[in-house]
Length: 321
Image 1 (cartoon, helix red, strand yellow):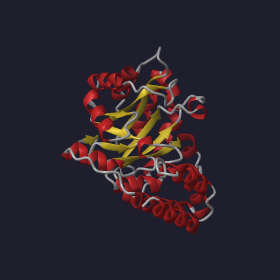
Image 2 (cartoon, one colour):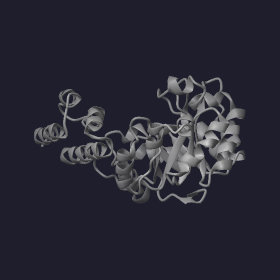
Image 3 (tube, rainbow, N blue to C red):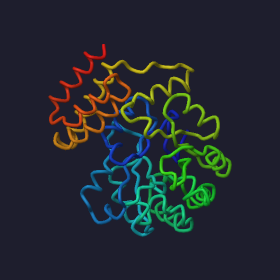
Image 4 (cartoon, one colour):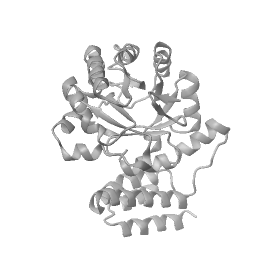
């Protein structure tokens, strides 16, 4: 299928997770079959003002394509003016965040807060589309709270403003990440627009992926937390959807090999000091469910070098043979 003029091969997309979906993780997930990846959200005002961190967050490598840069903000002018800087990374798609529930984002009028102001949301989409030379997509939630479930209106407005696709996280802002996911609203959005719809929320394995597609009729599915410590989820979902095969979870030795490779890439791109600090949270995800996981999390929380990380990974392999 296509989003605008960008061809997407496969059904499973990597979600834009702040502090997680960096270049190293996006490349890793794409290598396992993610059909495309979306960057961590980037401040439009930061890009507009030439902020170095924002520019770094918007960088895309050739190993993760097709890929989108996601921007956030609540000022149509600033959002539009950030597009030229975003395009320097040669994104295949520009995505607009209208779903982040984090207080520092939604509390400042951006992210999910835009669910309360559909007219402004539409104005933002139109402004970004006007300046962009690549397809523009929008990520929304089902609504602000249970009394204002307005994803259908938001999706229609996005389409009217020129959006090439819309992603719907089937929870309200008030829910944050608490269950349940409302797949009915995603199905309603799919029926109400002619652009592709991407379903998002609690896709953690092959079965939940297939159910999201079946229950909503959505064109693609977006995986976020289900990929934490398990980038191979994309190959598992692809095998199930394309061939009806259930791939076994990788053995502990493979999990540790991927973990070390992942952290090595973070260190390569960000420096070992930052990479090792981030290794602590990733290590907790990669060891989840293992016998002795609590002990391993404790060890990994104090890791101070790549060499120490490799030693712990080796010990985990030996102890879980």
